[in-house]
Every structure is written in C-alpha cells, then in structure tokens.
Length: 160
Image (cartoon, rainbow, N blue to C red; front, side):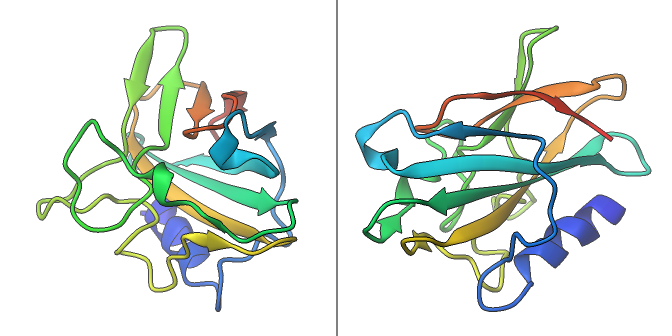
C-alpha cells in the first residue's frame, strides 16, 4: 500500500500540503473564468505494489492577486460523500477509458477531501497547494492524461 501511504503523507504535510521537492510531470493553465490565474501541476503517478491502485499527487498554484476557493473540483457524476476533489479524473487515451477516484464503502472519495486532515479548498495568492487522488487502473496502463475541472488536460503522465 505504498501509494496510499504516499497519498496520505502528502495530505498530512503540515498546515497545507507542501509542494517543495516534488518533481513536475506536466502542468496546465486554467481555461475558465473560475480558474483564471491558476496553474495545475501533476507531480507523481505511482502504482501500488499490488498493481491496480495508482496514486496521483497534483497541485494548484495561484498566480493571481486574490484568494481562490476550489469548490468546483468536486464530482457531479457519482455521489461521493462530504467535501472532496473527486472531479479530478485519469484518462487512458489509448483505450478511451476515463477513471474516477475510488469510492470507499461509506461513499467517501479516496482523494483530497474529508479523509484529509488538512483539506484546503482555498489557495491564497502566491501559494501552491498539493492534493492527491487514488484510482483503480489496470496493469499495463503506462501513461495517463489527468483532467482537472477548468484546466487544460495534462497529457502523457508516466505511471511508475
């Protein structure tokens, strides 16, 4: 369960999850009025030792001059319980398959949200806040496109 540990570790990294010392695998700019002045970045796509769970670490940076509330990153496809960022999906373009974050038996998203001790929906000007999402993705999928609502897709993310 190293992916779960990594994802939870990112969510428990202090007052806000930190992005220092994380690599960038790809980034995109906001493409909507809600995301003006924001940049999304994918830092990690790591497969668990069991093979089918992929942990994605991603972040949002606010380059604007006003605080942004990211309430629009929740999901409208499934009924996840509580506040969450379940709107972030992973796409396998080769097989045209979209993966939504895993939902546990209580309906909670295994992603940044109520399962995170320091879930932050607010990104202050100049801040970059890291988040995480867990997906069930079959072995053999080596690249993903990460789709974050109101951002351009982040393509060609290698799964390690």
